[in-house]
Image (cartoon, rainbow, N blue to C red; front, side, top):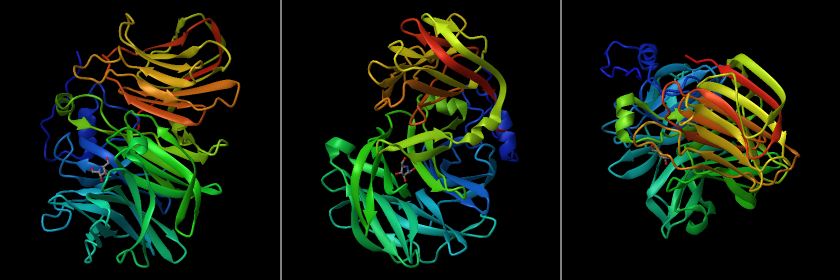
Length: 478
Ligand code: DQQ
């Protein structure tokens, strides 16, 4: 029987006590960040500040459901272990964020930590600023709030949010998420000298509804190699789309576009550049179960593993997990040249592990792993590379015992296979599955198996050789 967390919160409980109380919740991840309890969605304000990574996130501290959106806050020295910090932004009943502090970013405003976010009040979305003290634990609403009101003509007034701000010479630039009044995503460009007075410079890019959805949320824009990348989250929630191109004099000419992540649990990613010069990205991994299960669990929403984005030789983007995650590696098993006829059960059993596989791109049509396998193998999640189709498939039809869990397949195209070996990198963390293929593509999904479904097996559609298999149990970050 699953140990049921007690939801009756004790008022004196600190975040670590809440975490200890909920640790027994069967599907709660061990090495992915999530708030102590209740709801999280988008990561916000991701920034490295004086050697410490700060992560803020959309948080409802009152329930494991979206609503009353605050900004939660956590810090980390290594992107692996996180420390809970006091809630940073709280809706002010008399302010422009009375109904929620929506997504945004953090910048170094001339030595002053500065959060730029969307205030939500009575259906209106306006842009607001909060400045922090040097500890980044106390935040103050700027007297000029809201600093930007009203979508420009031709843009949908009800969708005007998610500021992403960067510095270019003497100017601050800001991108805002919106939609054309006629439908189709829009990333709107603004410019300012002081972060409070903003001039509209026009849309940086707009999309066609039939190609890239109705509305773009949470835009990110940053230099990458000799180009720039624009990342948007496509609403209705479908996938994360990326554009790469040349940016000069406020104009962005797209040379490549494609999906950064396929329809799955990953959404609203936020990027930042750290002091090592890496472009880091984290995203929100939504639950794939219904409201009753979330309510019973007492928590909902998880952060993806931090990833590094780099340019790919095909003109697009490549993503891989940050190497710091290797700190969590515990008991290991290494194999080489394993022959798999159709299925090979592995000696390690675990629900929190990392698997690294290499195999020939010219072998069997389908090669992969079954994870979260029950002792009688009736329950399992199959993660297979379909070499014949150039796609990844995560088959969740037998993944979950939880009523109301989403059992639909997940996956998508892998693009061109440029090497003769395939690299499949899988992270399982109880209900979280993250897959990286060829250090390039990322897929994330959620499953809700029975406790004890912790078997692992290699799969192949015809006899094939897995040249490298490394398995590591991963420890908890709490
Ligand atoms: N979530 C926020 C919005 C954003 C959306 C509200 C994306 O600011 O557009 O919680 O998930």
